[in-house]
Image (cartoon, rainbow, N blue to C red):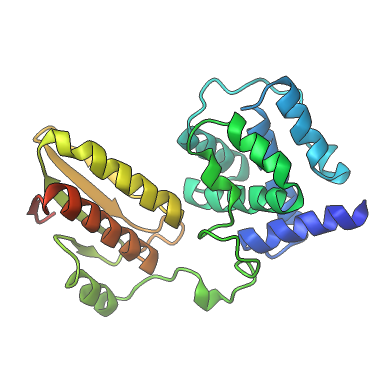
Amino acid sequence: MVAQYQQFLDGVRTHAGLSETEQARQATVHVIEAMARHLDGVDRQQLATGIPQGLRSSVRWDIENASAHSLEEFLQEVAQRTDSTPERSRYLVQGVLSALTEQDRALADTLQHRLPDGFSALFTAPGGGPPPDWGAASADDRPRPLDADELQRALNQLVGWSGDTERISREVTLPPERWTPIYRQVEAAQQELSHHAAVEERSDGVVVFSLHTRSLGAVTELDLQLARRIDAAISEVGSGGANRAP
C-alpha cells in the first residue's frame, strides 16, 4: 500500500500548494485529527479505515469530541494545529479532503452528510475545482499584492470602496431586514472563492466590509473578486445602500 500512501500525499501536496511530501503528511495528520473530533463512533472508524495505513497510524483517534461544531471554529482549530492563519488552514483542509474525495468518493459523501452545514465546500480543491494542476501552478498564478496604481484603477471601478494596498473597505447603511439575504449571498461567494471578508456591524447601523489577503498582509486580486461579489449582493438586495467613505 506504499503506492496508495504516496499517491494520497501527492494529491494533498498538489492541491494545497505544498513543496514537500513531509509537509503534506503533517497537514493531513492535523486535518484528520481535527475532523475526527467532529465525528462519532462508526463515522470516525470509517474515516480511519478510509486513509492509507501509513497515515492512519500517525493520527490520534482517541481524542475527545469537539465542543463546538461551526466551520469557523473548525478552521481555527486547524490553524492552531498547523501554526497558520485560518485562511491558509482552509487551503490545507481543502487539499486534504479533496485528495480524500479523489481516493474514496463514497467515504467523502458519507462524511459530508455527517458534518455540520458548510463543511461540504471543504471537499473540493482550493478555488473550486478540483483542478489537478492547481498546486503545481507557478508562483505567478498565486495571489500577489497589488501595487498602488493597480489598486487605484480597481477602486475606481468598485462601488464605495476605499483604502490602501494593505486593506480596502466599504461602509454601507441599509434597513435591517435587508441584511440577511445579503449575508447569504456574501457567504456563498466566500465559499466559492475560499476567501473571507471581515464584517463589522456598528452600533450606528453601519456595516463595514473589510478585505485583505491575510497570508500576504496585502490586497490581492482575490480581494477584488470578493469586493465585486459583495457589491453585486448589495446592489441586488439593497439597491446599493447608502455608502460612506471609510
